[in-house]
Image 1 (cartoon, one colour):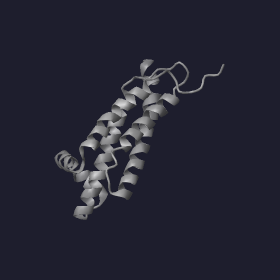
Image 2 (spheres, helix red, strand yellow):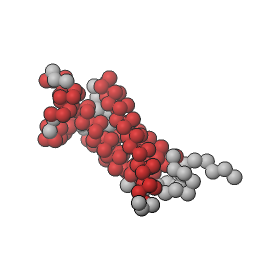
Image 3 (tube, one colour):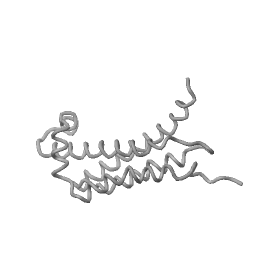
Image 4 (tube, helix red, strand yellow):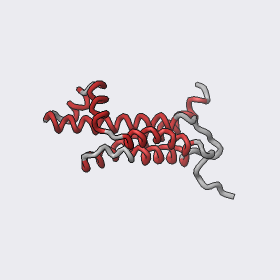
Length: 145
């Protein structure tokens, strides 16, 4: 087993757990307000990147792609659930049925109709923010003297 794989596992798992938590929070807030809340993409990017950076051990570096990729996946999954909830409201089917049966064509069409220019800008800025925050130093922990 190579040494690259174990050093990749911890930051990847931490970032994945942070992304799953952000998906749950984003979807819950959106369901309560009936809005896409694309500004939450920036909150998710900051959470994923900073948590991964803070959890690094001293002198450990993580690949720069982890936080931006998981931020993109978080945005995609959250928006998929939000659009599926809207489809379930409109059709009367359950969320599980709507999320599983909605194809990419319907998802992208409804997303284009739902989001405004500012929403797209916030979504595009989120992986950039994640990259910037994740790669600004070795560890976010305080170093003891």
